Amino acid sequence: MSIGLIALLDDVTALAKVAAASIDDVAAQAGRAGIKAAGVVIDDAAVTPRYVTGFNAARELPIVWRIAVGSARNKILFLLPAALLLSFFAPWVITPLLMIGGAYLAYEGTEKVYEALVPHKAHAHEAKVGVAPQDPKALEEARVAGAIKTDFILSAEIMAITLASLPEGSVFMQAAVLAVVGLGITAVVYGAVALIVKADDIGVALAASRSTSPLAGLWRGLGRGLVTGMPVFLKVLAVIGTAAMIWVGGGIVLHGLETYGLSGPAHFVHDLGVSAGALVPAIGGLLEWIVSAAGAGVVGLAVGAILIPLTAFVIAPLWRAVSGLFGRGKAGPATPGH
Image (cartoon, rainbow, N blue to C red; front, side, top):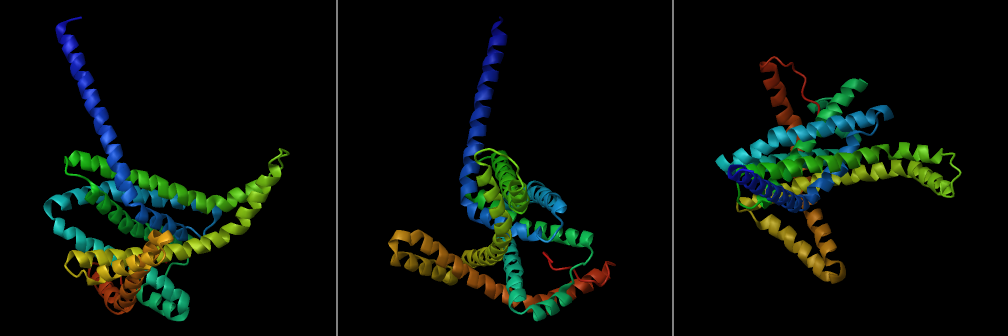
């Protein structure tokens, strides 16, 4: 074997070691960043199933798949390059964009609360901002579009948290970590959503099992439990999803205000949580989180309560006027999620 070939093999081996170390580094950084974004990931998983409920069982998985594809596309094609470009050229834009997204989440969640408390007035509000389509195909399109819009905002927060947690490094390393986190979180969230929305069908199959194995009775009992319990679970999850949008939206707004020097509200909520945790040290961390989340939720409700009339009387009419100027008709956009 020639000396040149040996040298070439040494170079290849060295490059392979560097590549392996880079892959390990990407995986480690992605894992740490994913943990920091876990709160938003849980909110995303809680929010999404409400967009799928109410459809024919045969359409549930295709709808989840469409939302998952839209989510992955958002993260990889739009949010990833936008995050890198903005962090390099205009980092000052990121906070106001996130605050607008947080206000949108707060509006969406507060609107659901408004609908539950005063349905007649909520329906009048819907009529002002755009009525949901009644045709099943059009309704599915509107639900998918609404879910992807909401996911876009939650994904933007996930990508921002990920980018902020990364150490200084090459743009390629940052892009690789963002891609791994984005695709990994999408797979986890929508895999969980698919299991949730199909759990009742799994329960029916288990309950109808004619197996004679020793565990057959246990499986049939589990199946019956899934069939009877999933409707209640989905209702509870819908409530959690609504609350998640409100407290995540409020938390984003609080953090944005703090960034601009208005730290009083954020410090008040934080201090309130710390004080609550100190009352019962045994569960101090849990109490601190609950009170802090509740404080962010109050802020989210306040923001949403302001945006409901603002949307009905200012934003929606302006949108219709602008749409009319550009030949898109006079019908306002349906509120996301309707």
